[in-house]
Amino acid sequence: MIHRLPTLQGVVKQLQQVPFLASKNLYRVLSHFLEMDAAKLDMFCAALKAAKQNLIPCSQCFVWKERNQGCLFCDDQKRDKSTICVVESWQELLAIERTEGYKGLYHVLGGSICPLDGIGPEDLTILPLINRLNGNVEELILAMNQTPEGEATSAFIVQKLSKLDIKVSCLAKGVPVGSSLEFIDRLTMFKALADRRPF
Image 1 (tube, one colour):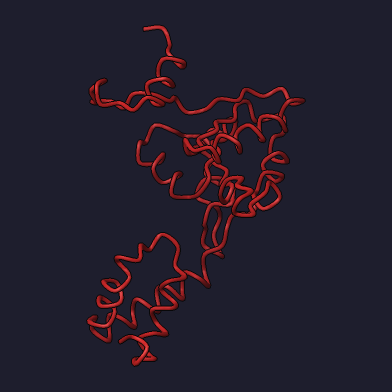
Image 2 (cartoon, rainbow, N blue to C red):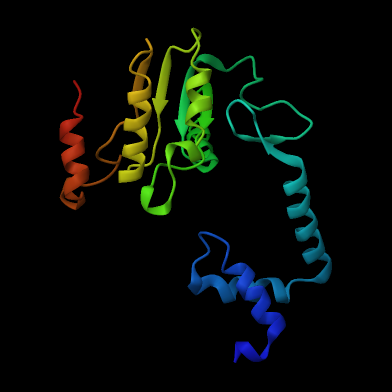
């Protein structure tokens, strides 16, 4: 049926190119836009266009910033300049910031090493990260996703830092707070036991 509605088909093709938009939600999202008030749709499009024009990655940490303003993190004098937390994307950064427990700097890699997807170290911001590690940085926190790609990326970074005198740490792995041990999967339980610490 959709092939008989070329305008609709054109929008569907564009939506199919949006990563993380599940195909089962594609038509719901399309319906939302089609049923949206014209003025609201114009506001949405204008906001998206303004974001594309005005937001750029910081040249140091690669976190989004306003084109004509300083970086929220690099230029904040209250942040601890001796610690850098490395994340795959700015979404992980937002999750860490929500805890209000970390006051250091960040570095956004832009993904993780994944040869199957054609993503190598040169496609990420690993070299700029290494170049940031001057004498002022004392600790690098690898806050990578707990995936094979995240682990491989962390291992690659650690290898590159072998000649530098800098403390490298990673996020704790193991049992989530408030969970029952009987429902924990085998790998998480193994990590929790392997990374145990004194009480």
